[in-house]
Figure 1 (tube, rainbow, N blue to C red):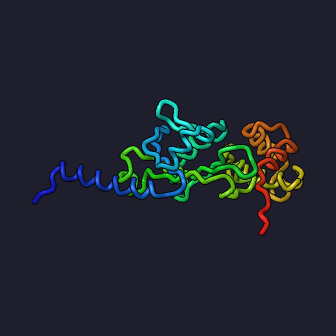
Figure 2 (figure 1 turned 180 degrees about the vertical axis):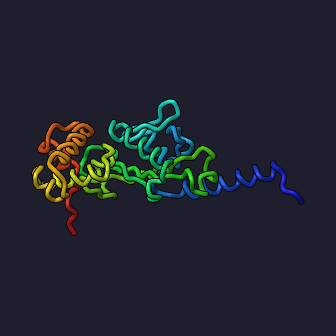
Length: 212
């Protein structure tokens, strides 16, 4: 017989129930959000995080991070994912200013077939990894938190290695003026005033060495 609209709606509800059951079985926290960060669904582990309000909280139905740079970075990651799926692999956002913070992995859903099976407005799934389980380099953490471009991230990496502006220019095959402009943009985004301050920031975010 012909499939009615009612039958189709029932099928969608069943599919969503299956996906929610799978998500609920995950040990890590998973939060499904819309483009404007409205919380559409949170599994059991994520609800624990939200109740504790140490890393994340919900205000007016929207997800927020307690650490201000992480709040901005999460919003940017969700927006970026809607534009280009963030390379289809997602973006890791540290949720605190510590050497090994908890990390939110933002996985874009906008153009994935599974999106409508979770929630019709689903824009991203945010997976919460416990502190120390995701080891980011300091450069990766700074780039994620402060939305550095690929070029700025590269310059920040040189700075973390102690290179001077002249040495960075030589390494990139550009003028010192170009490097000066790139550094100015980095300082503005990270609210650091010079290379020494930027180095200190990255030192604070450097993960501890794991010993076997």
